[in-house]
Amino acid sequence: MAKQKKTGKVKSPIKKQLDEVEKYFKELNSDIETQINTSPNNKEIAFGISLKSKKVSRNWNKVQKNLSNTLKSIFRNTDQHFRVVIAGHNKPNIKELRDKRVKWLPVKFSSPTSPKGFTQDKMRKRRKIGEYLYKVGFSGYFMAVDADDWIHHRFVEYIRSQPFSHAFILEKGLITNIGRKEIWETGEFYKKCGTNALFYFSKKDFPNPKKKKGNIFATLTLKAHPKSPDRLKKLNKDYKMITLPFVIWVLSHGDNNSMLKGNKDPGISAKDYGIQGEKLEDWFYKYFRTK
Image 1: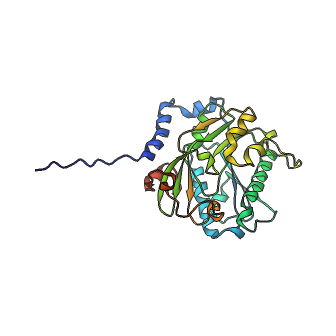
Image 2: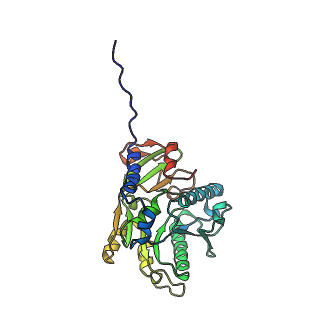
Image 3: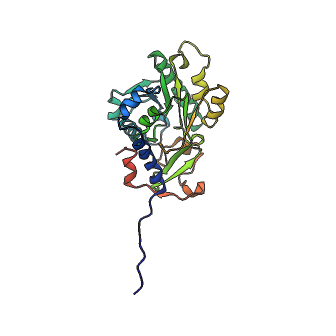
């Protein structure tokens, strides 16, 4: 009788990466909260979201749902030392915006009339967020987040457990084609996804509403993100590259700016990056808690 082959399930390469996050925390002291709060890097994180207008969205209900998922993934972080500031033309009707951790900033300038104006619109809203943080005297890390990406549930905890750095840049991250239910890992994530880095700013670094002159906030957050490491070097600011996958760039949900601008194909898959993708399964939501 022929011997049957053992059919042990091959562990997901992405899961191995995500388990490295858990391994990192297991290797820390058991009293991690005390360690974080007594470390030099006990900084709060401000997540800034520039929301597209209803006028230029293909499906406003989808935009609202995407934002809801993004906020859920942030809210469910193990470390609650964060705030979320959102600037937009139209306030979504979702329960997450009633949460005390969120500040909604209405904007009055005109909405773009075509995808060509998306980037400028996003940066004007980001500046509005920066002006608000200046007004309230915020000092800490600022991270621009696209209103459809997902944040790992231990991301805030991880950043605050690290030695202080003027910036943290995501070298690795995950991409999912939500329509195909496919997910894959990619390097140089900061060059591809808008949710890609954190920068430390004191109050004086944020834009003063009474001044139009640019400052370090404008230099690091209102320009094309692939050049962030070069700009930090020119500013003589230290930074750390993060090689653990803490962000999922969500594509093909029907209202991606990158696809509306023609920069990405709705059918994009891991093979376009020359790698093997995986099926987006329920276990991913253990790490990215949108459900």
